[in-house]
Amino acid sequence: MRRRFVRWIAAAFLVILGAAFPAIGFAVVSQAQPQVNAQSAQEPISDRDREFIRLINFANLWEMPMGDLASKKGSTQRVRDVGATIAADHRKLDVAVKDLAGKFGVPLADQATSSQQKWMAEIRASSGKAFDDAFANRLRAAHGTVFSVIAEERAGTKNSVLRDFATTANTIVMKHMTILESTGDVDADHGMFAEAGARTYDTPENHLSSGDLALGGVVAALMMGATIAIVRTFSSPGTAE
Image (cartoon, rainbow, N blue to C red; front, side, top):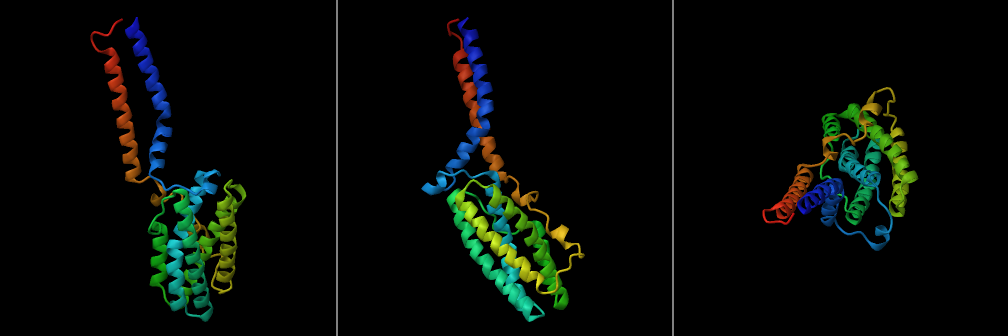
């Protein structure tokens, strides 16, 4: 009778452990993340907040170098001025994003997404008026998409720090859309709005890395080993029934 009871307890433990796995895995990962300050720790940060930080980081990674390039390669003074302004503003955003990522333990990419790298290659390969068109259209489309994401973040985040940052980012992105349009090179019928405006959520860069998956496997293996050890201990010969 006692052995049957012990086995019932072990089975229940397995069920509870399985249900708790996501929480346990998250707790293990959280230990490796930087600690946030006292103010931030008292306010929630959601998956959307984390994605927002990563999205702005991706924008910085390709728009800074493209702004620098346009400031030198633009065929008109207006395009060169717009490029310089965009590069300077994204450098400021880059500093702010890295600070937020450190406070909230959000890992950041160190290179642009595969799609963004294609746009960068396209812009770099162009010259003259074709360069101006590619630069203005690609960046205007990208800013248009980020603008809508910022609006969602500003309206929905429960974290006051991120709400303030979203307000700042909103002002900058609106400014960039306006000055890009002022070049006279933005063509709404070009097709780039839909293509370059695609969000980065589905790109490989935003998926779980092999390290994340490996960590999950290690946690699962440890829990399985612990469960087997418990079952063997209580079910070994000599245990009273």
